[in-house]
Length: 228
Length: 229
Image (tube, rainbow over all chains, first blue to last red; front, side, top):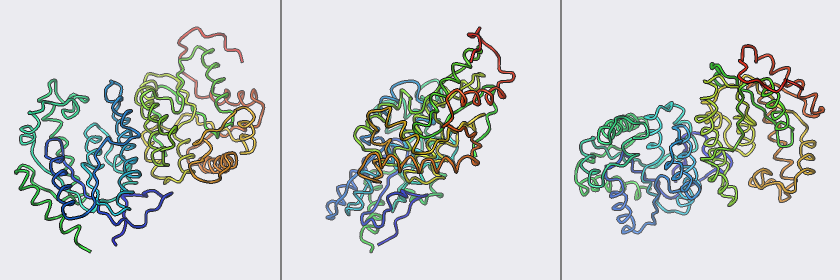
């Protein structure tokens, strides 16, 4: 059984001794195919006969309604947004992720706190501050960084049209959605690239077909869940 | 260590455990400053319109952990900071706050979160020009609360920590550990200690004398009501 490692102090009032399940994270910006890969991986792990659960940002019962409401107004500042997302993340970590891993389920997390940090920093947050906020976060067993350039993700998002938040329109990188999207997304990608080394992401070329990407990911996960 | 306030406005905050009398004192200070014709803004802990419904949900359903309790209050503070406190300090207003980051440092650490972690959360906040700490023995404040209020709330009493099945016993234990944290913060954050067992008007006299010192050069923006004590 491997050690349980946190990025900082973890939860001093509720020490976690062992976690038999594996925490698998898929990271990357919008339109890189994270949800497709999460779905494929989910099905495959179940076919292999393991229990598996998934989670994604902003799905906490505590914060979902409040955060949606805050995002629909026009007073949500960047610090407030950072901490609101941190609350969501902590709630899911303590109430979904850790209990699932304790019970022996593997857990797929569609994004982790790295995405939140990227968004925070692009909005002007101090990078060290943003990282230290997540001192309670559990270190995943593996983090895949689905990497693609802005032109490739554009091809995928245009089908559903430009989203206000995905285009960074709250910080108005440009006066129209298309240009703002390109600027905002390239700033995010810059942050992911920086974090890839810092946090030891496994970088996956996400400009290829879903099948090819999945082959790669499955290879790593196979090793992870069958190693002792 | 918090960064110093470099703006035109002044930041005066009050701290202390429940029942220490801090809200009474800041209310009297507010009235006095208004009567002098100063531009004053008052901000209360846990009052952000944006965050309130989430905090209420968490408290009502008892689903907050020490970490999420800490984070949701930091979110509330951040919203008030970004939308009110900081812009008003820049505009030269005297901002009064009933509870500040030190409440989180006391209460959340008493709940068991890492002291350095919670200090980082609030590191965007500025060191107040005056941070009053109303010191009262725990028994005095608890008696004030018990005699004036029908019910102590779940999180207020620290019931979530499982210190005791008895709410009042739990409340006492929890308040005592918050007191201990405040004592440790006096030097760390340069808190100005006021003896909260003194008569209200004597405390207020001291508060006004100290506040007077930083009011030099603060403009009078409206007629005021005479400046009576």
